[in-house]
Every structure is written in structure tokens, then in C-alpha cells.
Image (tube, rainbow, N blue to C red; front, side, top):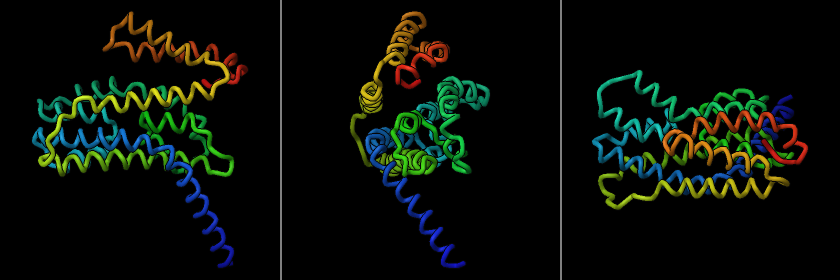
Length: 245
């Protein structure tokens, strides 16, 4: 009985280890972006008068880069929880669409589902949604480690920036373009995976139209609603073509 328990334990350890080894290479590009941006955020908090505890704890509990940058001004301003709530919802409204897209993929992941929901940032969503996970790798553990590693990268950079912010002096202008470049690469990888590019053309076309109609500051939410509607209508056609929605 004890031998059987040991065998099962070793088997489970092997499954977890294999999922980690498979997930880690996918997160290496994220490390480069998160480390630099997290470092910038930590330095920004430091020069704004906050101890390193602030970026460290906020990177663990909030884990939303855009919101964390905006939170600096919120903490320095007057206490207004309704404004904070509205701002947070507006900035991260896109996660509603991420959640809808991941409903099927998160099914059957057990307790890991709660952390996957909490830690689902743009980058983790991109990897977990598009990655070709080998059949012999546990899907739940793969997505868990992608999320955990990305979370750690952001935490590590933010904490390091908060600690050494007062000692580092350099121009951080342009570092945020690292994430833009990374998403371009993810888009190109997805483009190469698809046999046809209907969903890509729909996304680009709708984004351009909404950009012209609503302006650079307000086009994201309308474009997401429009893409969701159009892709839902075209889902059957896209799946027959061998693409992904």
C-alpha cells in the first residue's frame, strides 16, 4: 500500500515537473518585458515617495500593470474609492473578453482555476490560449505555471525597482514599447498557425474602424464588443476553415 502511494506521488511529481519544463520556454519573452516594465514601475513608485513594500505587495495582490501605474496617482490624490473602482473597470474591461474566451480551457483544472482567473494578464492569456500543448503534458498545470511564472517576473522586477530605485538613474522613456513589440510577435505567430486569416483580418479591420470613429483613447472597448459579435457570427465558418476564434 505504501509502495503504491509512493509510485502515485512520484508520478504526480513527474507530471508537474514536465508541465513546468514545457511552460517555461513560452514565458522567456514575457520575462524580458515584465522585468524591464516592473523595474520601471518600482523605480516610479520609489521616486514618488513610496517604500519598496508598496510595489512589492501591489505586484502580488493587484497584478495589473496599467492599473498599478495609475494607482500611484490615486494614492497621492484624495481618497475616492468610487473613482478608483470606475477607473479600474475601465482600464481592465478587456479581461471580461479574456474570461469568456477561456471558459472552456479552464474547465476541469480543479483548484488551479481560481489562481488562473486571478493571474490572467494579457500575456498569460495570449500564451494559454494559443499554445500548442503536447498531449502528454497536463493542460491545467501548464497554464498554472505560465501564469505563476509571469506573475513572478512582474513581482521580481517591481520589487527590485522599489529596492534599488534610489540608486538607479536612467531615462526609462520608451521601455513600455517592449510589450508592444512582444504582442506583435505573438500576433505573427498566431498568423503563421492559421490556414486562413479571417479572424485576424476581422480584428484589424474593426480596430481601424473603431480607431477612426472613437479616437485613440476610446476605441478599445467598442472594438472588442464589435469583434466579439462579428467573430461569434463567423465562428462556424472560421472553424471550418481551420482557423481559431
